[in-house]
Image 1: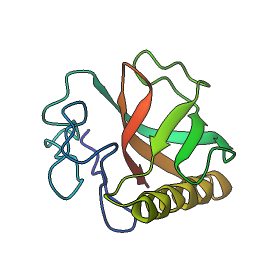
Image 2: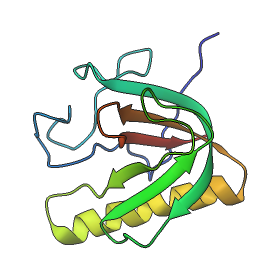
Image 3: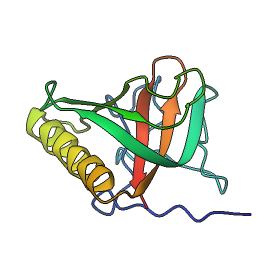
Image 4: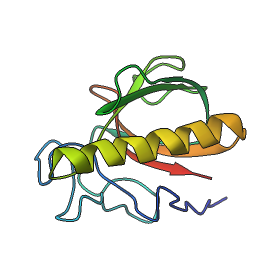
Length: 133
């Protein structure tokens, strides 16, 4: 059964890390291009996680990093291990605002028992795409 993935992170599917970084498949807008299966086009170590529930949000690393846990494994990142979202943007203020937007989406998912879809880098449990359902 095919699932349609919709982006709710302020209308954008946003990438992680320095824009144009070789370690993160991001285009000039910071968006990570996905194929029809919802997988990143150029990252062999990325794992797609669909319909996960947020179980913990760690806000003490804000404003530049949001750490959180979900109820299922993401490749080598076990269920209950911390996943990391680093703010995206060219300027420090943009990165802070991006991290705050993702934090708000995670909080909405946790409080409203909504699920999220993620693309997670298997090597370091860094999230490159986050969508709320």
